[in-house]
Length: 204
Figure 1 (tube, rainbow, N blue to C red):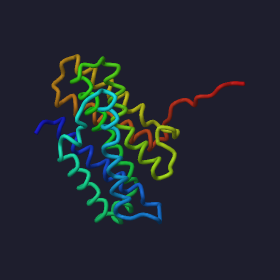
Figure 2 (figure 1 turned 45 degrees about the vertical axis):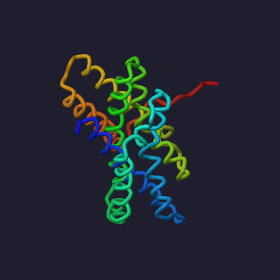
Figure 3 (figure 1 turned 60 degrees about the horizontal axis):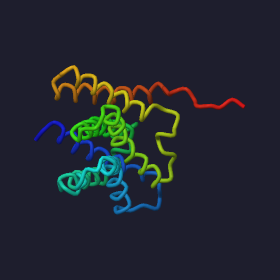
Figure 4 (figure 1 turned 90 degrees about the vertical axis):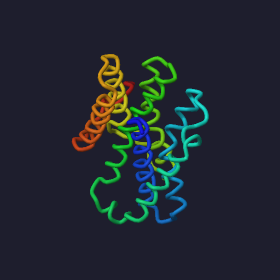
């Protein structure tokens, strides 16, 4: 089992948990609703990436273990729901881990299909953030990429670091670990210290 494959399965698992936990503030919810939200959160970004890159069959259709990873994540969220919700910022942590893993997976998938490095970085970002965007829309929340905090920018920074180390011939496994941790640290620091990019304003 390669590091990329393991990272993608783990990212799927953690995003499924974050998606299932996203229904925590909704009184009208059930196991199916949580499972569906976990499913689209986990596979949404990768599905959009593969469609845009023309890569078929979609990864979760081709490999049943991705579906199993989603199911495992939803089961964990279900049985440990009260415990996970009580842990401060648990939702953020699971989301940040999925974000860091999926960014690198998306970059590597794009590179394997022969696209330019700029496109590979964007595909990494799409893979990581679009599942969360779909999750937020389904739960009637403002999509996280529109909130005043560093989110997608962390993905682009991590993707750029990965590509830089890639062309410097850094060992692939080392590169994956460094770049993933880099994204995770940026995301967590951004939340802790309320870091954000300058506001986009138009002077009248």
